[in-house]
Each structure stands twice: as C-alpha cells, then as structure tokens.
Length: 336
Image (cartoon, helix red, strand yellow):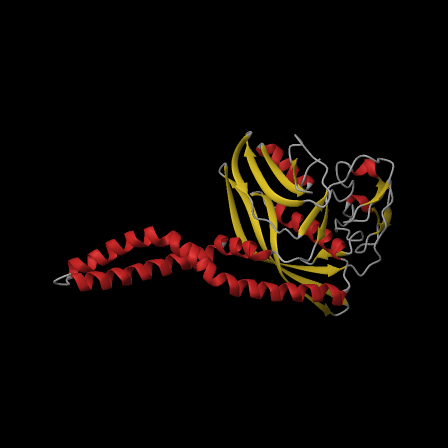
C-alpha cells in the first residue's frame, strides 16, 4: 500500500524512486515503502526517518520530523469490519480500504498530540534554518576580521596596504576555521528565547482547540489531504513534511468560517536526478464546509452538483458536466 497520493505514487514509479519511511511504535522501528517492498502495520507511529532511493540506491536521508504527529495505517486482520475514512467519510468494509480509501485515496490517519517537544527539537530547527546559516556566517566573518585587524595592528611595526590585505586573508582563513564554533555556540545563545516563544505559541494552540471545539483528527486529515494535492501537482515535488505548525487563527467572513494555518514545511524536489530539500514558511486557509456533509456508502453515490445542479457520482470527485470539484465529503477544505 502506498504512503502518498495516487498521483504522486505514479510519479515515483515513473522516476524509479522509493521513499522508505521509518516509524517508532512501542520502541520498535517499523517501516513502509512507496514501492510496496515492505509495509508494516502502523498504529500511532511517530516518523523518525525517511530514506530516498533512486534506482535502488540510497541517495538522501531526512531525520527531522514533528513528533506530535502520530500516523496509523489500516490493519488487515479484520476485513469484514465496517470502516469509515477519517478524511472523506467513505463507509465500507475494511478489506476495501487496504490499498487506501476508494474515493479520496487517503491511506493513513493522522492524530496530533499536544506535548512539549523539548530543547533538542528547537535546537535542530535553529540549525536547519537557512537564515541562521547566513547570519552565522556574517557574524563569524566580521568578528574574525576585527580580531585579525586588532592583532596585526598591535604586532606590526608598520601598518600599510599589505597589512590590510593580510587582515582580510588571515581573517577569511580564521572565519572558515571558527565557523563551526560560531554555528554551535550561537544556536545555544538563541535557543532559550526561541523555546520560550514556542512554549507560548503551543499554549495558544491548546487554547485554540479548546475554544473552537474543532475535531483535531478530522481537521488534520482534511488538511493533509488538501495540502498533498497542492504540493504533488508540481512536477518536481516528490515529497513533503510539515515540521511544525506555527499558529492557528480562526475567523468568520460573511457566512463562512475559516482557519488560517501557518506552518514550517520541508519540500523535497527531484531535479536533474538529484534530491534537494527546501524549507519554507507556508500558509493554508481552511474553509469549513457549510453544505451538509455527505455520508458516502459503499457503492454508487449520487448527489446534485452545487454549481450546475446536475446529478453526479460523488465518488468521482468532479461534476461530469461543469467539471467543478465536489466538496461534499470533507468537513474542511483548502480555500484557494
């Protein structure tokens, strides 16, 4: 069973890429692969590693994930049990969901646990921030130049243009030597303010869920489904992970209810036979479905298109007449 959307699955197969994702489950390391070579049953697993293979060779590894996210993959030991997809509401026998939901193709369920991520999580995030790398390099270089200027100024009998050249040459060499020292020390210096800030934001998030009464499991499954479609529509994107949810803001506009989500995301590209990760801050605006949520039953489901009024099969996802997307099955969807 694939880990990701059907569209991206076909993309990976065409590129001959396999993504092996490892999970921690009760102190055991289990795995699932996009090429279906090995797929363990996962119950409330925490992602701990992703290995990216191209032509059966390991090219790239990622180990940074949000440990608050817990993933479960459908078990296959009770095939006659009734099951409901937590993303779209499709109802059927468990055996029909082994390869993902027949309608929305979601293949795992997500839960979100409120917990302190600890200092290491924030420290790792600081070190991976491109802006931090750049600023550290500038600070390192300036300090090294100033140090060499003072040193050479005091030990040289004369101080001319040759000594100035030495300042920049020796300063650059010293900057390269001291960069790792600055890289580590600076992270510890700014770690505590960041952790205090994130603890404050986490408290706001807990208050948000308590105040709004929004079902977190439904919301995050809907969000993941929508965001997956957004990213995987790009030809070069083969994978992504939301590493942190920075904030949640709910508001009403006219008669509609929205939640704006700001997230820290890692996007993995495959360009010119090379894997490349890019870290971005992204914003998703989720809109609550004001229509009655359609309960999908096993088999043929017909409803009226909300745009043109024609009778459509809801399991096809779009109206065959006006080609509008049908959003009757999700409680939340991405407002584009």
